[in-house]
Length: 271
Length: 273
Image (tube, rainbow over the protein chains, first blue to last red):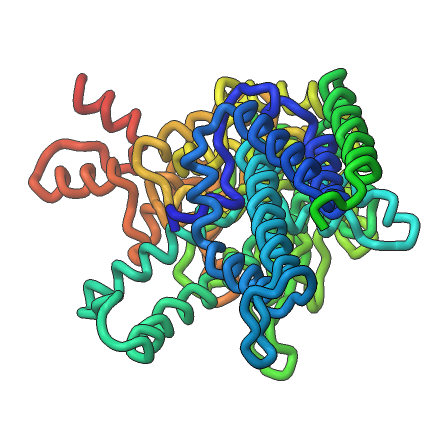
């Protein structure tokens, strides 16, 4: 469990930590979008430098980010090798039936690798520097126009909030159930894959049962405390847009403009 | 002296069963009247219907027959949302009733549901936090709080509505003895200062002994209703509170203890005479 970095929050006071979650989300999403504008090495260099700059700004060590990429490395390598092996064009180095290793394939492979890593780094920056609850508020605010077409935005964000609130409890409970099963003689992490999977059943079943019971309790609590999904609710948590949030958005606009410029000037220099 | 004459909770001929196909009533024709400012303990074995009764009072269940009137308003589907501002319910499990991600968010949850403006919410949350002595914990998340502190937050969430009645459904069961004592003294203080009625469902006779009045339930009916001293003298099934047990033991040993029921304070006074 401790290996998973993506989706964790790291308390801190950095400039990035203090950016409004709405600004952060918009910036991260637009960064991922403009990754596809870059088509030459100048563009990728710029984005790469920007990513490193943002990672420095978060005040969190690079090691953490590398750990965030590690669980996904096989997926990345798989996609990259597909690109390398099945893209044709330019000088052909190896040709073996349907498999071709060509100049374009290799370049594309490198670009896709960089793209993947940058997407993971930037989303890790967002989750590491934003409290889950602030992220939920940010998502709620960004989705709020959908209210016009009757999407239950508030319900969705309340669901997210409650889910986040109960993750530690579920982890505790899983630990307790595992201990209880251990006390009854189960050993985890031994035997064949099938055996190990069978051992999960006595953990998952009690976990389900207790989660359902918990959900029932919570529904009662929410009802006596006056929760009605059809009624408008006010919000105690307030998001405040500050100057630095505008700065963040403007930075993204500038970055996009420079990328477009590089694309035109560079004129596919490498292709 | 504390008990005013105003009736706050009026239950008349209340009947309830969970399964309408069976003739198995969880509550049969219960009538109770509770006055503003009273502290009432409801005791009884498992399945006696005491938890069902508080759930009916909070409007979580619907009665088959009979009426519930709270502060002059009859409880039904239209009035239940307003009545819930007057009558709060604290549940047994502290963990499952903490909805917010921090203490102040949790207290605000009920206010948000009622679409209260931000400024008013801020003020109300501050006041409620002070009433239960949790104002220094306002930004803490629930994982850093003890069970007793979580129950305090739950009570603050109710107090934010300036309620007439707080009901506790075995709310002290999962707490350690010290938290239990602290919470009980908070409740006592609240009752004295804010004239709040307390209805507590409990198994703990020491807790019940603190009440002004004890209602004993069995099999869906009320079998006894009176002040603690009557209840503990006349009931062999309930194990009496510690002070009373001590008095009986002393009497058995031939000590010259008074023959009537004694509260803990009376017992201490008698012992230290």
